[in-house]
Length: 327
Ligand code: ADP
Ligand code: F6P
Image 1: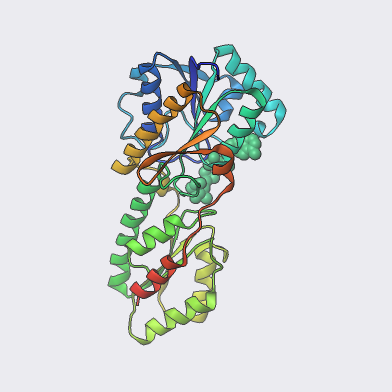
Image 2: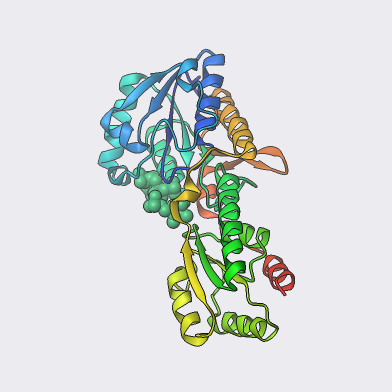
C-alpha cells in the first residue's frame, strides 16, 4: 500500500496552453477539499530547482478559470534533464514535505516526471496540456480546442480578404510534430489543401491541384500548413508556389503564438476541470506515474511512459475528406 499523500505540488511545464489555469484551479480546490496542503511550483521544473514554491489556498485560484496562460508560469528547464538537477529538485520538495505532484504539460514534461518519480519515489500524475493534441491515451488535450478555434477565426478572416482579391493564401498554423491544428482548422474553414508533419508533403501534387482549380476558375484558395510539415512550413511552400504558379496572387500568413493565448473555450475549461479533479483523486488513491486522459467521455489512465512514447496516427480518411470537400 502506497503512503498516503498529504502535501501536493502543482506545476505547469513546457508550452503553455489555454485551460491550464482551469486545471490548476481544479487541482488546488480538490486538494483542499480532501484536507491536503497544496503548493504551487513556479515556472515548471525550474521552480523545483530554485525552490520557488508557494502555498496555495482556495482564494489563490479565484478568478482564473477564464484566463489563458498559467498563473504558475511555465518554462523549459535544462537542468532537469541532468541527475544533479533532479537531486536539487527533490531536496527542495522534501524541504516542504511535498509527497505528490500534479504536472500539467506535454510529453516532454511527462518524460521528466517519469524519470524523477522513478528516481525519488514521488508519485506524479500528468495532465495533458498542449495545444498540439499529440499525446496518446486521451481524446482531448487541454488547450487544443481553444487554439483550433482561434485558428479557425483567423482563417475565416483571411478568407474574406482572399475572396475580395481572388488570392491564394498559404497559412501556417502551429504544430511542430503534429498536424491536428492544421487538419481540424483546415477542414473547418474549407481549405483546399492541408500539409502536416505526419504525411510527406508532395509539392507536385499540391501544384497540380492548384493548377487544376485555376483552370476551373476557382481563384480563392487556402492552403493550411502545419509549422512542422516536412517541406519547411508556409514560407518554403510559398516559394515553390510563386515560382511555379507566378500568375497566382499568393500571400503567406503565419498565425504563430496567438494560437497559444486567449480565454479557454468551454470545452477546454470543462476537460481541464475534470482532469484536475481526477489528478488529485489519483494521488489520494495511491496511483503512480499516470496521465489522466479522457477517452470516449470517460476518464482514462495511461502510464506516463506510454503517454510519452505513443503518438496518435492520422487516418487517411481525413485527407480524403479534405480533397473531396475542397473540389
Ligand atoms: P512539453 O512538455 O510541452 O513537451 P518540453 O519537451 O520542452 O515541453 O519539456 C518540458 C520540460 O520537461 C523540459 O524543459 C525539461 O525540464 C523536462 N524534460 C523533458 N524531457 C525530459 C527528459 N527526458 N528528462 C528529464 N526532463 C525532461
Ligand atoms: O507544443 C506547442 C507548440 O505551440 C508547438 O506547436 C510549437 O512548435 C511550439 O509549442 C512553440 O514553442 P515555443 O515558441 O514556446 O518555443
